[in-house]
Structures are given as structure tokens and as C-alpha cells.
Length: 508
Ligand code: NAD
Image 1 (cartoon, protein in one colour):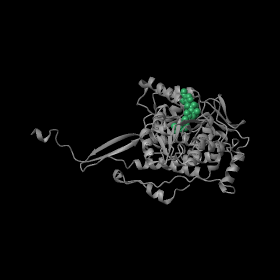
Image 2 (image 1 turned 90 degrees about the vertical axis):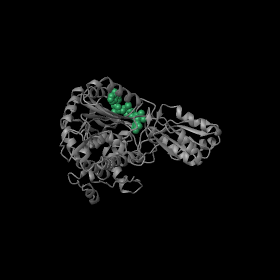
Image 3 (image 1 turned 135 degrees about the vertical axis):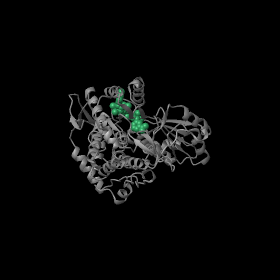
């Protein structure tokens, strides 16, 4: 697919030597979210794609060294709301295959890193265009059937967010070339944005298709080679992303697609001398475990590895007595229950003043009764579906704390100190003074802070996402800062005046 003329013109490579003076600007906007109304073409396309998947089991190999490989350790991904439907048959890479993948990736690293960023960015623009157009319905259907998402939850994740990650990352990577040091008449200074020296391990979760594509894609865009271990429960959608990237022109060895047992993957990658980065999203225990393994193996590595991890949260909605009750009720229902509460940003703690609680409670219960739980592919009125599996409380559970209205300041302190996490949170209040107090007291309680809006639904480039404390390293995917994690800049000075003497003038 051809790029629009404007984008092509702006991407034109500047003349060599003047590169540091040339400013690149790339126009990108957020992908529109489709509505899937009755009779719309997108609804018809999605229904066809869902029908095409009925009863089908897709065979998903490991892809190592540019070749599809099957091992004897065969696994299945089940549809969460219909366990009789095996949506994917895949196999685990063992330690030997993972080591082959490391060697194959490292072998192409230099060539990939030397490819101009303009060329690398084009691949991601093209992948975004494929996702936005011809493969959108397929991606949504696979995310719905495989991960139990509704139409809208699949659309905002597997279409809009993934497309936005690819386009905005490519834009930010191109514009990073504008960040250049000061040059003076006698010397030219420049910064080269190199990939990291080694391979990056991308370990992705089940709950966002887009995160899989971003964890593997962002380092690759920046000139890195990647071993991508997707979640067993998101294999179908994640393999489709991988194939789309190849179709868009990603050379075969840049990303090795290696489903594997978590512990085998973690042990193998962290014990390789070539390990130079971890791009992880998942639970706190897994991230801490990997971090400890990296520390234990530190002496083996050729370079200090970059560790990026986005983990969980116990996110809050704080309601002040001046709040708009419908916004509280509707925002909380969406945040706590959409995608069965399986979003890292889902609200699990609601703090309501005693003066408003009777109203809020009555309305919450009234609306909650209308929520339809079921098969999201059969019935588009379904609001949420089955949780992914029975391993952990990561589901539609909302706790409520009712406080004496006048004690709201103490409650803000409590919110700040009662949880080890710091991911997302929202304050509902019309009183501007209270909003300002909440902003100050909750400054460290959330990396994504919402005022009169729910705690979920961050959009790439609008609300870059992530939190600190136990919620992760807060590297803000969806912003230019995230890409800085995946580059190791080289500063170059070129002097134009010969050095005629070793002695300084003051010495004479
Ligand atoms: P998980 O920690 O169980 O698994 C995440 C990934 O790690 C999977 O691919 C898994 O196979 C792998 N893994 C497990 N053990 C491993 C090991 N020893 N070494 C290497 N890899 C290993 O998490 P999950 O259940 O897939 O995802 C849900 C979690 O992710 C929740 O806690 C959620 O809050 C969090 N999450 C956070 C964000 C965010 O941006 N902050 C976004 C989405 C999900």
C-alpha cells in the first residue's frame, strides 16, 4: 500500500552532512474508532471474520532463523468462553531452540541497526495501514475469540491502539533525528541513535493484543533485534501481528517468534551474554523474578541491560461530595467491569462520601443488573465475557469504601498509602479546590491520573501510559520517551580545523 504523498514528502532523507540541520516532521493522527452499528460495513466484515474462525484451530509454529519450527511440546490456546474451541495449536521452544533464536537474531543485528530509520519506519507505517484496512476484521475476530473481548474492547485494543503504536512510534523515531547537539563553526557534532548491542527479550501479557505488538515492535523499530515470547493465552492474535509485520517488510530474523514456557524462556535469555534488554508487561512477581535473575547474571553481560516493566495496579476512583453522580456511576461501571476487569488500569477501589453513597449505590446496582455477561461473538450486546483462566483474582471485582464526607483529606492520604501500586486513579469532583488538593496529595499514587473521568482508556500519544511504585518502571509507552529506552546514542564530533600545536597559547 502506498503512503499518502504528504507523508512521503516529509520523510525525504536530508542531504548527507546537513542531516543535523534538517528538521523532520511527520503528520500522524489517532486511528478513528469504528462504531460497528447495525448495517455498517465494519460490522458485516467482523461478522464474516468471526464466522470464518468457527471451529477452526490455527497451527502456530515457532519462527526461528526465518524458518517455521515445530517441537514436540505442543500446546493449545482455548477460547475463554468456550473451552471446547481450541483456537490455536502451538509449540514451546526449548532451551536449544531459544539459543538458536538468540544466535540468529544477533547475526543480523548490525545490518538491521545500520538500516536508515526512514526505512525501518516505513515498515511500521505499512503494517499500520494493513491493520487499519484489509486485516482489521481478522485481528478483531481473533482477539475476541482468543482473549474473550467484546467488539469495542477488541477495536480499541487490536485495531486502534496497535495501529497508533506503530504509527506514532515511527513518527517519534523519525523526529528523534531532530534531537541533535550544538555545533560550532570549527566542529560539527551529531548524535547517532543506535540500537542496543545484543538482543532484547520482549515478554508480553494476555490482556492486550496491542501490547504484544508494541513490546516487540518498538525495540525493533529502533534498530534492535528481538526475541518475542507471547502469552499462551494471546497466541492467535499475536502471531497475526507477527505475520503482518513480515508482510510489511520486516526482515525475517529481526524478531524471532518464540512461544515458550515462561521460566525456560526467562532462564535462557537472562543467562545469555548477548542479553541487553527486557521489555516486559505482566504481573509484579514475574517482573521481580526476572529482575533478580538479571542481577544474578550481571557479570556475564557485555552491556548493562535495560529493564522496562509495566505491571499491575489496584486503581482508585475517589469521589468527593461535589461530584457529578452519573459520571461516577457510568465511569466506575466501565472501569471496573469492561473486559471482565482484566485491565491493569481497571478500578478496584471506589471511595465514596457517605452523603452521596445511597444515590451512587442505588444507581450502581440498578445499572449493574443490566450488564450482559456471555459470548461476545454471538451477541454484540454482551458487556463482558469469561475471565481468561482460574489462576488469579484479576477479574470484575470492585471494593467500596464509604467515608464521612468531611474527612476527605484523610481519605486522600489513605488512598496514597494503602496500596503498593501507583498505576492509575481518578478523582470525581466539581470543586476546583478539592481537585487541586487531590492532585497534590495523590501526586505519587498514579502514573495516569484522571479528573472526572474513569481510570481506564488511555490513548496512545494523548495519555502515555504507565506507573511507578510496584506498577513498573513507568517508561510511558505511547510517548517519545519510551523509544529512548531502546536506543544507545553515539555522540560524534568532527573537527574542521587542523590541530597545529600541542601547546596552549598561555604557555608561551
Ligand atoms: P504474567 O506475569 O503471568 O505473564 C506475563 C508474561 O510473562 C507471559 O508471557 C508469561 O508467560 C511470562 N512469564 C511468566 N513467568 C515467566 C518467567 N519466569 N520468565 C519469563 N517470562 C515469564 O501476567 P499476565 O497474567 O499475562 O498479564 C496480566 C498482568 O499484566 C496483570 O498483573 C496486569 O495488571 C499486567 N498488565 C500491566 C499493564 C501495564 O501497562 N501496566 C498492561 C497489561 C497488563
